[in-house]
Image (tube, rainbow, N blue to C red):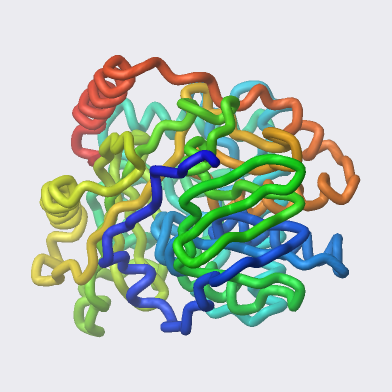
Length: 441
């Protein structure tokens, strides 16, 4: 038996989880359970895979296993941007090869379409709004990014609009930024509310077990998953647990995904008078010109989100001292942008796990006999996770298309350097790029 040592243990004050609908978690697994399919991870990828497997194999029983509560982990801790456009930070115009970019665009829009259909058909209340996004900058290098990105989008026939700083208060209420690139096709959501709703509307042949951390796995003709109160024996295993998948004893996955944590804070609800003082549109989302700057949102329920600051946590678990330190960064970033709201306090602050790879590739397909998965979304979990989870279930049902072929052709993430070189390199990069973000942080 391979012992699984790294388990998720997220901090308790995720604003999206706390401000979304309270639900009764599904019971934890107990005793001996046998199933045709077992999926580890009830985030966006796992939920999408479970839904599509249930559709493709209506006579099969499917078990979906979540170590914590649904909506409490990574899938409920992101900034809530369902982005379709490619954004290759390694290319001069942030788009790169047009043919590759068009395939990425098709993949992301597939994820958007699946997400929208699931939300609408199941009447999931998750503040979903197709309102686009602003990529905003204040410093010259950030503005150069916006201009280059607009040129790249033109190459693949995607429209965008450059908005000057003097006009931005009518859009986002703040005069902090000098310029923004508006792209209309991003969808904003309340991420924890969405995954809670997806979990509560699973098909009848899917059984969800929450608060069931897998602590060991035994591979063979059948695969046995061990947890505190029993075991689950499955014919086929799907890993949809992002960076934690590299701890399941499969050589191909080991030491390939970088566990980065990002930090967010959400204010209390604005009063009517504060909303008037802020102005702008009733909801919007801003991503930074610099990848290490601040992501900002005004939510449907009139809160402000600030998300910035990274840490490298090799064990995949949060660090309380980092959260305490980075809340000060959030406050500073908030007051730079919204001095008219100086008396508005944060109600919730939290960290969230990103699985990143050196070459920005993810995993898709078969990892070992009877073991499959889709892992490492590189920060695009809402669209990419939804799409790859669905497509993996289609591939397992014998289907093929151009998106599945593209995902299967990926080399996957590169191997990481050994410690201590990995920690030295990642921490130095985070410090330097955080410094270079300047006022956009």
